[in-house]
Image (cartoon, rainbow, N blue to C red; front, top):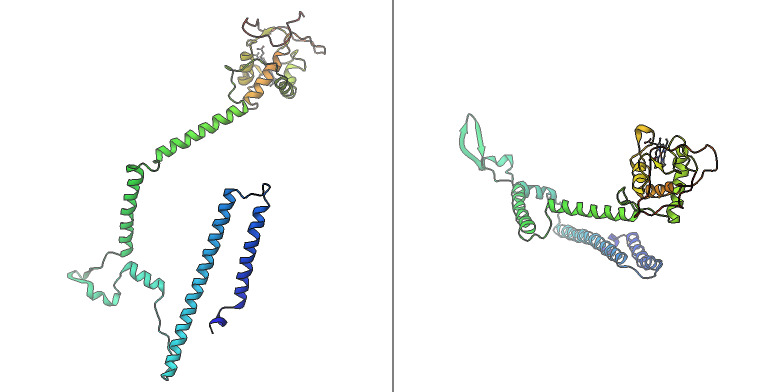
Length: 313
Ligand code: HEC
């Protein structure tokens, strides 16, 4: 009777699942390129194994309880038969009903008399019910929780308070931002930009110039809508800092747009350095260079000349 109850199919499935787990997990672990399981995968494997085993134990437990109930029932039936009676199962309240009764401790309407107080206001009676136990449980639990909270957060300072957590998160974000800026050369601005003749910088500068700037400044820097870059005359100053600043903020009212939203700081440094390489060169192709605009810029002694010495035009 006992074994007929456990379906053979169910057992088969269980065995197949267990076997596949035992074989698949080591195979998965070995497929990694290093061959060795790292700590994280090991933890996942162990935890999933524990999870699977506990689910199995739970399922087996439920089945065992069912089987025991069956055996007891059978026993009762047999006893009833021996006494020549027909077994009538008694209706037991479900666990849910039992729990609800316990949690509310409500007196059934039929027994209301037992808790009725003896005063009577215009036909309105008062019942002396107990406080609902579920409510009391919550109350006690909140006291316990409050005490634990006080100890953890205020007495032992074991965990950070809300504003400390906020400060820590902000700190992390700031560090991440700084790391990102340093990585991408994004902390370059008009004050710290440096003159450079590094081929990689100039090559990237040329690529950007040819893509974004030729339309107005012409391929050889001789000027078109925008001013000429080959002479020594600058409207906004000819130092690397001045040039970077004009590129970054633009001169919108004169038709030179601000590039800071389109180019990264390192790109602006590259194109600024490239612009300065036009200094003193002689454009070969028409249109002819634009005449001088602005003031003549003479690099200071301390500043390195960007390209070859200026050539007379
Ligand atoms: C739509 C046309 C246009 C484009 C595109 C343009 N510029 Fe200009 N640029 C101008 C004009 C016009 C001026 C003159 C502004 C003034 O008169 O103050 C100028 C001025 C400048 C100056 C200052 C020159 C001086 O004499 O002080 C620099 C440097 C400059 N541009 C670089 C660039 C770079 C680099 C790019 C590409 C990323 C670029 N420009 C794209 C129109 C343009």
